[in-house]
Length: 304
Ligand SMILES: [Zn+2]
Image 1 (cartoon, protein in one colour):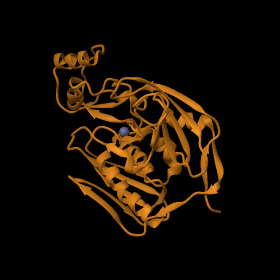
Image 2: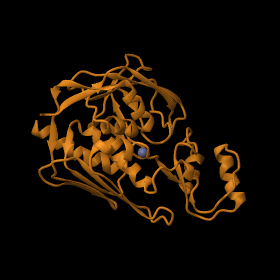
Image 3: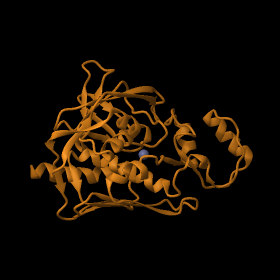
Image 4: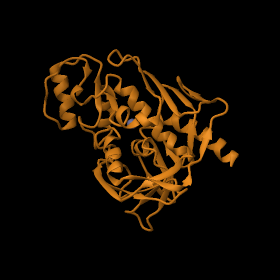
């Protein structure tokens, strides 16, 4: 039996704060017709412009994946796209009343929960797949992403930041059937040294200790540590040494690698067609992910 396309049954709404903008936003997921794909709609702008979630609309990847079309942008789409793709949804309208999706807890769990609440339903049209028949490879600055032929979509991600706290980590997802339990709850992470710079540059206005794992690599004095808490407008807490600052928020020991896999699935959703292949990534990031997806997208369009 060929697979059928899927959408959701009912509208569902979710509220939260954008990580980089700090703005409160409302997202509403709505069912979409067969062969629609994924469509963002900026309901706060005149004419409610639509932005197709496709690789050719990626305009920025430095901190998150940003899409732009019809004079409208939507930023940090990777976690919401990952949830949609991971749950096997093919057609969806994503209404948003701001320029950046909410960060929520830094994972895609709240998105998957909402989509499951809305109910996922099969449509009549058959789902199309792009089969990887020969190796597709993108490499840049120590990062590489490779797709190899396989009957199933699977992922393997390795990270190495030369961090004594994280070490080298690997995450594997053998099937999207395991996405909900193995990947959706995995939070984004940030190194404390990066965080200070971002805070100073006012680039993470919605940042919080509950929406990212904070990796502390260097020894601090309690005084230095309190100064960082002040930067965050947070209460002073006792410094416990190097490690994951908010370990209580961590679900898996290799959660950072799993989160990179979460981001990769979100960016892969921008290919415009489901893939059958084995995806291997070393130190992936949004730039490499989206450049790699552009290569796939070109092959998909050429094959049409
Ligand atoms: Zn992420």
